Length: 315
Image 1 (cartoon, helix red, strand yellow):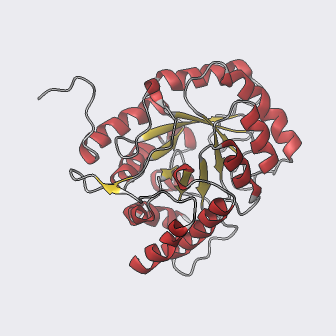
Image 2 (cartoon, rainbow, N blue to C red; image 1 turned 120 degrees about the vertical axis):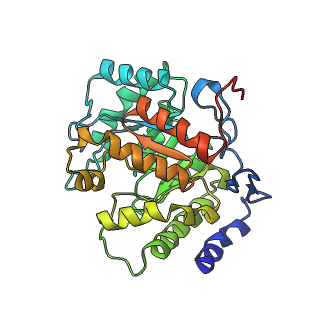
């Protein structure tokens, strides 16, 4: 493991790197990473990695979401859900117009934008928290940023369209790089994921991305078997020395369904368990469908793992 971490961290010699890598929270022994500049989250709070876990609420503007929550074309429902998420103290909203469910039909950029742009335009004037766009196409990302998105979530980690990094760099916005692959074959699961993420980080830096704007996602449910997903969650703490914020998305995933034998809309408890354990493993952001419930799971978990306390707390 140490060998892989050292190999991955060589990207810090890049000219755009920060002058420091990380600090350690003496209370929790967790790595404290430099914040994304000028980014505020729930309640207008400045984002500070390590203070607490941040919650990203999922809004699918698709007709074929695996979780059955797609809101394709219904702008009132999209805005209503986003407002509900914001009121429930979500820190980000992630809007996607192309399903990533197994066997999904890929969209071309024009069709994706036809779904996405009206939703973003409706949200941008009404939502105060950052809006992420879930896309792997640079042309879509650029138009989405013009329409009000402030973050890009690339489920292919620059492997489908490397120019997404250029779009994010030009706009100086955060970029989420997820691990993904077309097969479920690995020589060695975590080292293979680290190597792939290292390549994605290097592509982002070469495109002019600043390191503090890069967020990583191990890609639960993407190019992985259920056993792989469980192993990643079990070993999530091994991602910490990469020294980038970590997003984990387990919400309603099929691994939970297989373990509990429940359809997507009955996977709340399984999602809660994976969110709590992801936080214990060092997750900085959790991407979820059930925002009010998962905010509460995060707060309770953070009070144990990160030493977070609510405002006005006294012994």
